[in-house]
Length: 128
Image 1 (cartoon, helix red, strand yellow):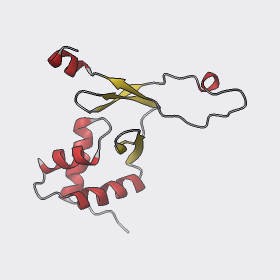
Image 2: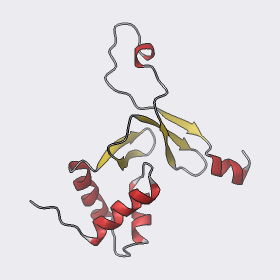
Image 3: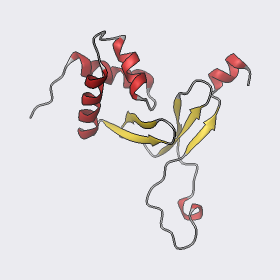
Image 4: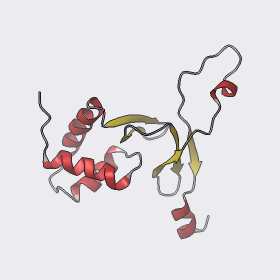
C-alpha cells in the first residue's frame, strides 16, 4: 500500500524538521496546529504510528513523560530534560562506557540515559 502524503503528515514531519529534538504528543499537536488548524490528536497518533513503522521516527521511553518521538538515523546519543521548561534535548555522543556500567557477569545490549536539570535558555531567563 502506497504512503499517502497528506497536509497533516507534512505538518507533522515539518514539526520534527524545525524542532530537531525528541517531542511528546502534545508538543507535536500544538506545533502542527500552527500549520494545519484542524489537526487532531487521533490524526497525530495515526501518523506517528505510520512514521515509526516506515522508519522515519523512533520511540523513546522517557521516565516521566512516557513515549517521545524523534527522527531516526541519528548516531547514538543521550537526552537532557529541562525541569523548568519540560523540553527534552539531545546530547551528541555517549556519556557511558557499557563495559564499566554493568556489574560483572551482566551483558549490556543497549542503554538510554536521561540527564535532568536546567537548559541554557531557562538559566538565562530565570537565573538558576
